[in-house]
Length: 435
Image 1: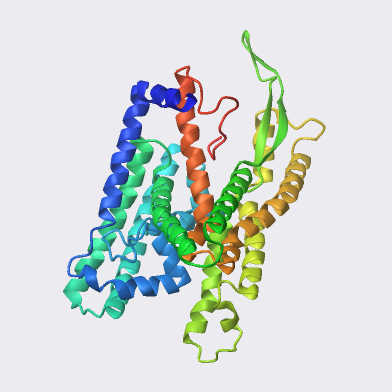
Image 2 (image 1 turned 90 degrees about the vertical axis):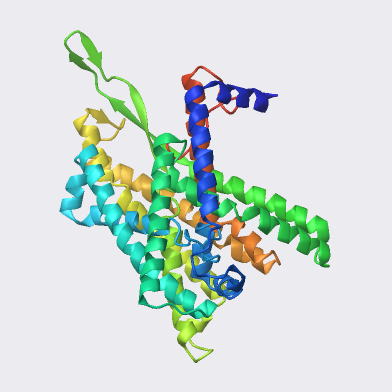
């Protein structure tokens, strides 16, 4: 079989075999740490924390990204999200502050400085979130800590978060795939077996369709996943012709290449930004005594107004994030410096306008499809799908999982082709986020 032969080829490549082994061991360490409860906490008293996590949208999101460690009061409860938050902040600062823009243009040295700033900011975020987590834990579980215990547990949570960040960086350096993304993926997929088991048991024990309905759900999940793969891989190739240059006795340029403009250049960032904004009315509604107010209309995450505003925010944020990450003017300047041009388009301003018009056209269907994928879990819940299983029908969990799997498989295929083996597919190549 093709699969067995591919696995044999992977095992024959010593470097790839070592990288896969290291990645697997680091993931085991991460999953083991997710089960270690904070000192001073009785694991039998964590049911209240789990109930609080399951009924709050933001807590569910944090628990999903941490692989359940958040609701288990684990030493890895804060997960990798503080590092992701710090990375986003540094990335946004690089778009508005000249000093950060200068570091971005300095190459490797600038990248190392930005990484160091990201780590410093991660420590600050971990300390703040760690203290807030312990205070919430006191309230939910019913335990009390003195000042020294609060400080100690905050340090433990912060150290756990930094250790996860270190694991992610080591996976990137020594293992296979992007370590940070892989850790998020492992946290998400760790909940899948339990979720699908609950859904299967629930369908068999209820009168709502039984086994037939469960099989329909699996088919729909497969179709949604295929759509997410198409959204992740979708690109518009813009041809670029490079002029010929004679340097000494050698000729450079003269080849035609392509600029792959992604349909979903913003990836999952619009969904994350939109979710952050949608939690604001939820917070106001929890403190409001008026059950018929404006904020209370957004309490129901399956409601019409919540999902409509959520969808529109995702479309708006897709345009916003694409505009600040994809810069046609800079791309046009780089092409002009390297004697490149788009056939039929004048270099410089006309090229920038042409690229901008293409991005505007392909971003619209990409943003609409991204919004549909984001609200798919709400439709699944309305049709009676278990809440935990419905999370895999769309949103950040599905898009992150698809992106990480494609990226990792693409790197494995690159190793195979470098050693003159066939790729993972009989024809064509896997186009991950790196391609």
